[in-house]
Image (cartoon, rainbow, N blue to C red; front, side):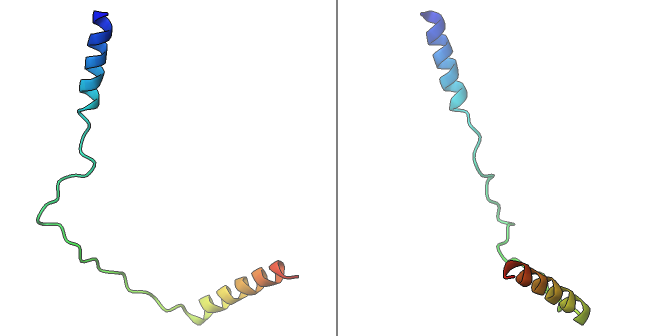
Length: 62
């Protein structure tokens, strides 16, 4: 009986020592995110995308 009590108390103590889910917030953190600049595709890239889209549409609707 003593072994069960010791085991139960050890499990209770081990389970209550869980680490915090999130690290502490610091004053130096910043929420202002800079989004990357997009690129305008070239005519060649647009033609490739159009060809892929056309092939997809013809395969989808024969």
